[in-house]
Length: 122
Image (cartoon, rainbow, N blue to C red; front, side):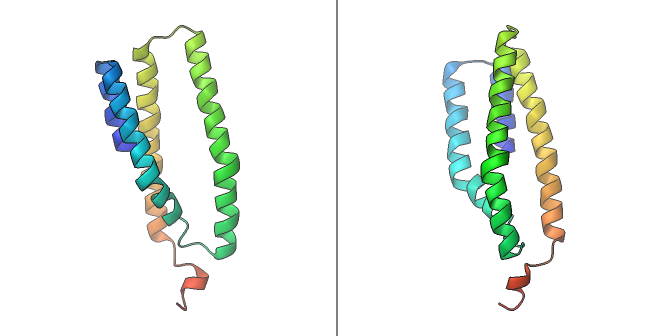
């Protein structure tokens, strides 16, 4: 997902064409629906049942909504400042690079985790 976003926002920074924006959003939404949701759930496979339900609730309520709110505030502030498409895409590219670093760190940590306690006897 971050690779698709990085390629898409780079394309939009170079050629801000409405057809490209549509294509990037279709790719992002399709990947989010199919792959990203599955990957997000797979991250919790190595946690205990109790931790899994608590963490999923926190992620899907507080953190997800906070991210939506911060995204809306960012767009509002950038639009209020009258910043053009180029700087906005540069901001998006920077955020996606941070996203890639976080995804790599989460992947490393996930591989180091032992199996969930309730999966050891299965």
